[in-house]
Image (cartoon, rainbow, N blue to C red):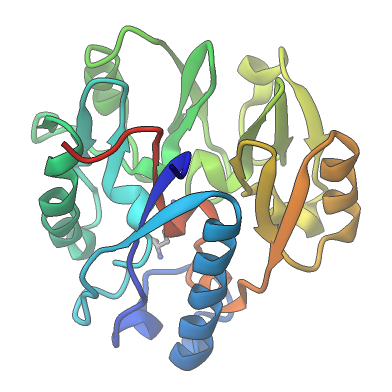
Length: 257
Ligand code: CIR
């Protein structure tokens, strides 16, 4: 039985109009994105995932970034109160699929939170205080779980996981110039330079790490820690401000009930 289920959604027709602050945002090619997405799904399978497709949403430009719509907790699922109006409808569509995996809850109407701000580790969940996730949401979220919650201010970029991801074995890939890293000092770091910042977003599935192609220095460091890297062309998603974690919702060793 696969160790993980990954929920994904292909980019829809409006994907080239995704929200973005990237300089290449007006130059997103849908056909290339679809082919890159297919390779991404192939890598998820190679890393041991059973892949489940959510219905494509042609009218919701950012709907391929499913990570932001929900947070999978040990005993429940948070449907994210997303700040961006254009993204809120995505949540209903994810919710329909997630109901089979657990009880779904949400937060009050003043809380805003994106899944990209959640970095889960064995001892704590680190939550980005960011453009998208507010303090009210972090306080309300902390009541949903027995795990320790640690707030990390995101000082540059979109989400916490745009700047830092946890690989396992106490190891982070991190761009410390984009977050207040004072609460992350207990980890070992693979530090990315400013021109490698996009490589800070990696998806670890046991000892396999999905990461963007084009960062040989970082992939070598990840492999030196005993991981296998699966390197993916991500240009069209990068232009839409998204990375490898954003394209899936990972459910650990649980099956639908
Ligand atoms: C957005 O701005 O919401 C999308 N264009 C990108 C979302 C990326 N998601 C993520 O980092 N988890």
